[in-house]
Length: 205
Ligand SMILES: [Fe+2]
Image 1: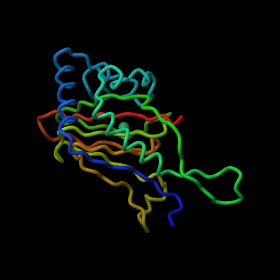
Image 2 (image 1 turned 180 degrees about the vertical axis):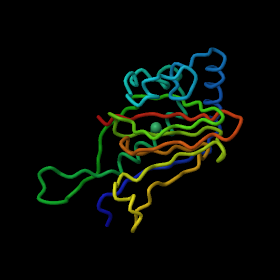
Image 3 (image 1 turned 135 degrees about the vertical axis):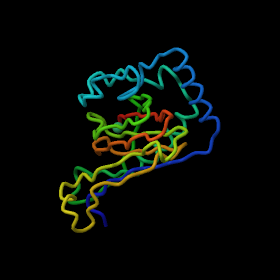
């Protein structure tokens, strides 16, 4: 039995249509220079995100402005499984009876991260949201992956079962879903190429 587990959900595909879809979107963004749905260190990123306030985050609507149906379908299947795997306490029960969390959800924000050479992303949460995710496009391990920090403050004692953080390489054609409160950061991009990832927040209705 795990009393207070933190569950994340990685998922990978092998659908070339999704890769082409994202390639085409990035090409369009590069040609038009419209990076209004990019975040953090990306060109014209919202400074509110950079400085951690998350104000104006609702303006980031990548999927609404640049629909990518194949990618969105893949993400939707992963979200459905992840959300369905979570359990909630039943309010009227006497003790720890729990039941699966069911219900509808929507991707409430979505944006593209374009991280250049030598850049990284500082430790942060996705404040005000419930489920978040990041999808990696044409990435290599040298581009820097994601580091999740242990939410248990006693992890710093390094005594027993208390890793301070767990690192994941940026596996291409894959998404990682995680609770929005889970602090994370990205490692430095050590290549000359930009690292592209698509991030999003999910609202449970
Ligand atoms: Fe993030």
